[in-house]
Image 1 (tube, rainbow, N blue to C red):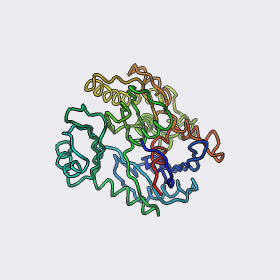
Image 2: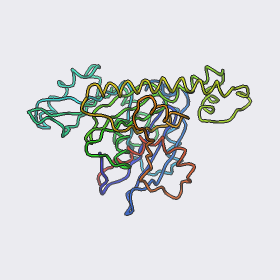
Image 3: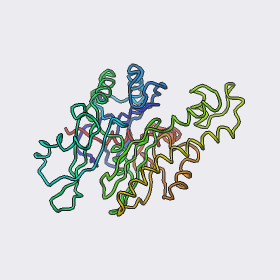
Image 4: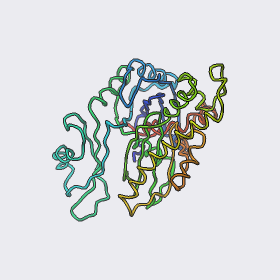
Length: 354
């Protein structure tokens, strides 16, 4: 969606509820290079349902991720997600961009479930109208207090917020950089984060359906913690396939497996309902494949269970598929964090014109 030109690189900063990811890309003669990457943990409960409950800890995580990455630039692109962000494709009478800018607040009121004075609005005119006096417009609204939270932690980190995107669109940027999309192909991009799943169904090269679901990888940790009576940290370690420690030495593998399978069924069920809703409302657009990204898609058995539930071809989206990694990064690091970089890489693709 966004190309590279003669421009300055910026930090792609994905502020997640379990970690902050910072990425910097560079355009080289041989392609796009991943030159810097840093990841820092965010303490449990620092971000809950999109609300920043411990801004100090989030700021520290941002600073740690940028410091670990060795990034010198201060300019940041970040992304918002969750129930405080609304994305809708709407059909309006044909008008100029200037006319739409004048009337967008009035047009948006009927689609936004918030007070129009409490949100920031943006829009993009799509080339998908029926040509009979109508045009399709992608409408985006985000609550001002959510935006203020992001701006605050970024500026407190000594950085400068330049671009605010939507997480689902950032993943789309990553997809278009790394994969080829057939002319009439419909692809569902599903990014499974810790607390939010971003769904973006792309048709004819533009978002046809976008939704965020409040579920994700933390649901596994909570279920393991509850089932096995262990700490959050220990449950997180078990989720990621760690062996037993003294705290969890009595853990029965079947108990873990059962807890994980139960959450997988629930999470995939939520996602599947959204895909079914799209299929029912866009009968002419059949999803050809699903691309999974985010830390949650690394859960054992998730990919095969997703395919079994939806009967759709499922692939893991590799945000680094066509990027050239700097020789600073070893293969293990890239394999560990690669699936989680869908949002950060897409943000780092946003450029500032010189």
